[in-house]
Every structure is written in C-alpha cells, then in structure tokens.
Image (cartoon, rainbow, N blue to C red):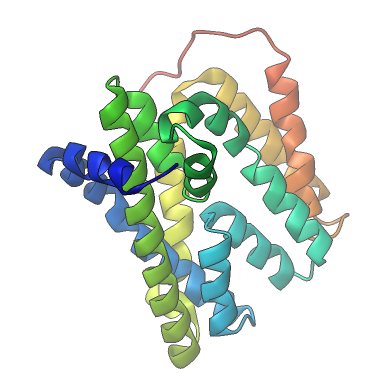
Length: 236
C-alpha cells in the first residue's frame, strides 16, 4: 500500500535542488488560483463553491473554461463537456508516467488527483525513477496547496473588492497559458492546429451556444493529427 514508508522515501529524495526547481514554477499557482477565484466570484459563483471546486476538481484550465462558459450564458452540459475534453489530455499523461507515481493502486488513485501538466513535465524530464517520483509528489502537492490558497484569497478578495479586472487578476490565467504554449509554437503542426482551431472557434461563435465553439475547435487538432509528422520548426 501507499504508506508512510513511501512518503519517507519521497521526502529523503527531495533535496534542496528539487525543492528549488519545483517552487520556482509552483509560485505561479497561487497567482493563477487567485485569478480563478476572483473571476468565478465576479461571474456569480459563491466563495465556498469556488474553493470546493478547486479542492475537488483541481484542474485550472477546466475550471476557467467551465466558469467562462457559464458566465457567457452556456448550459452546464456544454461547460462540463468542454472541461472533460480539455482534461482528456491527462489520459496519455497517466499512461506515460503511471508506473512512476506509485507501485500500487491506492497510490496511483491518490496521485491521479494531483496529475497536472507541470509535474508531468518534471517527471518526463527526469531519468532517475526515484527522483522522478519525488518530483511528481512534491510538485503536485505544492501546486495543490498554492492553487487552493490562491483560490481562497482571490475569491474572498473578489467578493469584497468587486471587478477583478481593476487589479489585473483576469489576465493572470491567459498570460500563464500563453507562456506555457509559447515554446510549443516552434512546431509547425502545433501552429497549424492553433490557427485552424482558433479560426473555427471565431467563425462559429455567433452561430452556436457558448461552449460549443471550444468543442468544434478540436477539429483543428484532429485534422492536423492526420497530416504526416514533420520535424520542421518555426524559426525562433
């Protein structure tokens, strides 16, 4: 089982360099979490529901998408479907690193809740299995704590102060997502998928309910995936 022995092993492996690498990235989680909390409250969600959502869902992109679709007048079905589609990327993540998360089912079940892009990237970049496992749990734990603290602060502050745009909190999440996306734009297929998906979403936005353009934009990804792989990159 996932026991105290496993946790002690992870703690011993987590040296100063590991903590430094994780905290340097995880520090942004509180800011983006605050952005979510403030935007969700401004959209009409009560503070307690913002916090519960972050605790139970813990998927920043999906949480922002659900709130955005509901705030734009979309139905809950469209919001949930769009969020599920966005989070479908976690399925290959789990297949790729599931054996490194834990040696047993309970550990993998617990670990699946903190499976995010950031700790997956840490694990895939690390060759030593023990260190990769420590990176996964330390990064996942840090992001979980900081994200939820940020959500609480942002939700409470947004409830008290009003418009999140006045403090720039509404821009934190788009800025963070753009920073994560930017390195991937060196790949031509990624650029094609982004441009085609964006064009589809813009074209159908006046014609379909809120949330549906995001789902239809996935056509861009599906079309590009059917094209032959290329090693060409966009010049820096």
